[in-house]
Image 1 (cartoon, rainbow, N blue to C red):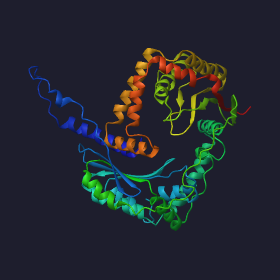
Image 2 (cartoon, one colour):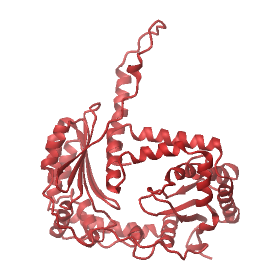
Image 3 (cartoon, rainbow, N blue to C red):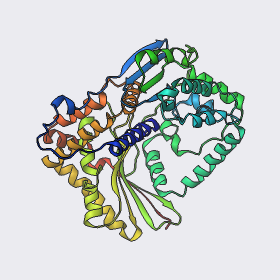
Length: 452
């Protein structure tokens, strides 16, 4: 969940607490008529407004005046998968731009009680600010100054560099991370950008001038977006968006977009990754997962929930509730923008290896042969529909979803529509998908276990 979603959720919760404390509950009167239907009807979901600010710049607004809080997002169309961004050390250039040498930018954010965060993901780099409406003008000025900062704190650059080194060394002793690394290496060809999270990171560039230049070049890329959510009007959002960012540079680097390589076709049926000082074994029964745009994505949502998506899933019942071989058993991955590792995963003590592996394989085989029951389908649909409603509660959630759809080139309302399509599927249709996708022969068993 993004910082802006957390902030809005907390503020709504606190508002509810305050209301409960301040309200005097009247004596019960059974003659008082119930409220009219329009008084208790749910508030209609806000429709995001999308417009072009200027060539290469788009804006999104989810207007909601229930809480005096505003979310401002700046999103650039390049992320950690980009060869160009990595060559420019653009990740640290973006993520550390709020660390000026004097600490003035963070001090201003603290004085405003604003939540300011900057981060890079696979396809985008983002700046998010959540602040009170009364501080909107000062908050916008702060964002502009962060995006213009050239005084990178050299001490923070050094700390970040050391943190990368420590993080990498620590990951080598984390069996769950090693399991994810091994499964990714089985799926992706060497050099694929999707492996980047599993290779040793480069040292942080400590040249403030070069970092500022890299940030400026990334900020001027066409395809960037400015997002707004909360207590501001379209006119206010348009005025801010018109002056927030520098002009776009229409000339884009040749190596800007990631180059995805074909998936490996030589995956073994099983693979053991040895590791020192373990008393447990970590399992991943894995294959390549379907993508968001696969026609079977709605069926996958149901199947995945039944198999390993909740506390009483097939995996949990078999491996925790019935035999107690593990504390956790779940599915991971699948349903991404590109093919990703999809796995049935669990862990257990060394002496339980044979039993646990047999159970893990048996769950997959039974699922492949019998599919889901009608009751499981109904419960899964209830979960999907409830989750969709939950995701639409706050304007920040709606903004985040809209930006994701735009970034991935998905049609508006894609995720809502996917839930509707899943809800319309019959048990037979879902089981036809399961028969095709969950064939045990398509899966490889990967384990991280103690050195012999």
